[in-house]
Image (cartoon, rainbow, N blue to C red; front, side, top):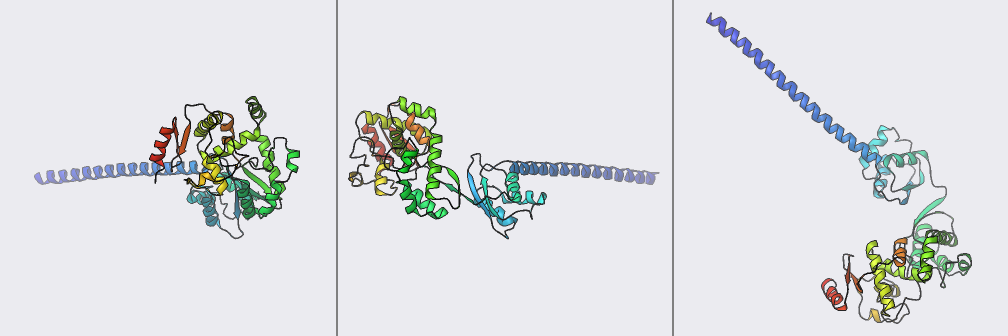
Amino acid sequence: MFKKFLIDFFLKTKIFFKSFINKRFIKFLIILIIIILLILGIGLGNYYYQISTPLQKISEQKEFIIKKGEGVNQISQNLKNQKLIGSMWNFEVYVWFEKMGKKFQAGEYSLSSNMNIKEITQILCSGQIIPNQKIIKIIEGWNYKEIGEYLENKINIPKEDFFSAAYDLQWKNKYSFLEGNFLEGYLFPDTYQVYKNATAEDIIKKMLDNFDKKLSLKIREDIKAQGKTIFEIITLASIIEKEVPKEEDRKIVAGIFYKRLKQEMRLESCATINYILGNDKKQLSFEDTRIESPYNTYINNGLPPGPINNPGLSAIKAAIYPEKTDYLFFLSKPTGETVFSKTLDEHNKNKAKWLSN
């Protein structure tokens, strides 16, 4: 009887533990599957987000070249180097999934920085190559010499041809807004698509047409209502472009310059000295500020004879729509941040604090 009881107890215990272990194992498997599915879901969600979202929100045209014989890996590396995609892995996985690896076509393409991976791949596989065109990018604050050197290196236009064309008096007959003896200040900085056989005159025309377009009727009316000329605005804007990087600070600096002009104080702009020197010194010596030149705003009152570079729309608008404050002085810290002062004593203290060696 006892023996039967032990056998029966053993069998029931064995069944219980077997059932318990099976339940725990099944529960473990379920949890593991859920975790795997979550990881896959997050991974796929992130993948689809990455291939559908551009790397940058700002639109900037870039020239992209696929050379004959380049594979997917080299193409993705070049795209990443030009900051058109953020992940080579996402690009290559997308190409593999869509079976587009053998559809890329050699040639030159015009891509925008606000395109996503899907859009970029579609263009590169469709053969939408630039028909005999190049993309050039003129940076805000470049003077005409820097533009000429850039064009010579980028699209093989001799800089002497560009300089000569910039002094050609024909432009004054074609564009009513032009003042001065040459085009410094009016060569509007932007990204342009030009034909490979374009001449210096062709590119200058594009820049002047763009300037004419950007300077809207409202802007011209506001300039006239202030009793100023476009030439005066562009001249001051070119100084602001080099002096201050931040848009909100530019309007304050414009207000300071106008206040100094009204009080017949010298502008004392470091940007004008660097224009004379032909460099970009962060800190000027006393001797630098004594250089004899009509562009030296440390020894001459008023604006310089003309623009010192070609300013962008932000600096131009700052010169048109300045912000009035109690400030009369400013300086730029080594970090680029602008520090404002109301008095000369306060300004000197800021110089000692931020610009002392």
